[in-house]
Image 1 (spheres, rainbow, N blue to C red):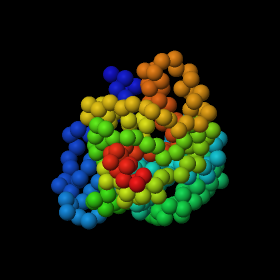
Image 2: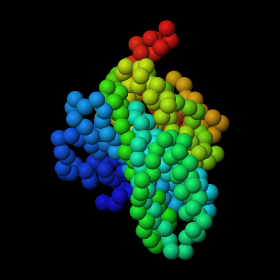
Image 3: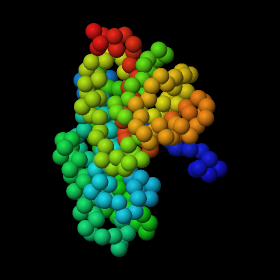
Image 4: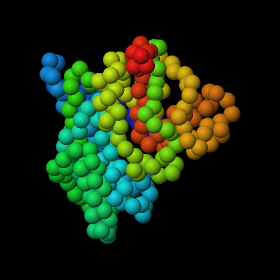
Length: 268
């Protein structure tokens, strides 16, 4: 069996199923972040790591300052998806020996700009030589109040699902300049009592695990998103298209399912 036959979610489940976990691990592999803390602690620690790879997440020759912004903001978005606040980051890069030093300077300018804007401290990391494409890995810590921690498992039948922005911008390269929805996430965890966070690529996976379906009433898409949807002839294929294209279209917007009674309370 090859990796391409297994898929990312099944691979993660396979690799992590026998890993040890101490008593303070509230949430392990499978959510947006790991959650660490005691059952009665007021705050829990969030742990997240993510990577961007040249040729996969950005094109060769791309503006490296924008790549640095994206590398950190991908992690910040997952902290937001848990309702949390970012704290400290470690940066690991692996680059070819003939890489331009100026390009790496630009990469770190982008990392520093994102860290400054979102009040995150970059406290170290690692550098290594790579025979292949540039690889940038970010490990990030954060925190969230126990009462405001958002898990993907919190959705229930009857919840409404909302997205924090318009879909389609990634086809215009907005994936290199998106804004992590940290402010929106904190507001939502304060005002909505029943909620959980996920991204479009997770929607089918998470609802399937809970044997819950979902229906689309309206999608806030730009012209690129509508063009994608118009290429599919029937509703079922369109829904498959939604899942297939969310990751490249969504600019790391967050989907927020919420109980209907919460929405009525906010409207009042």
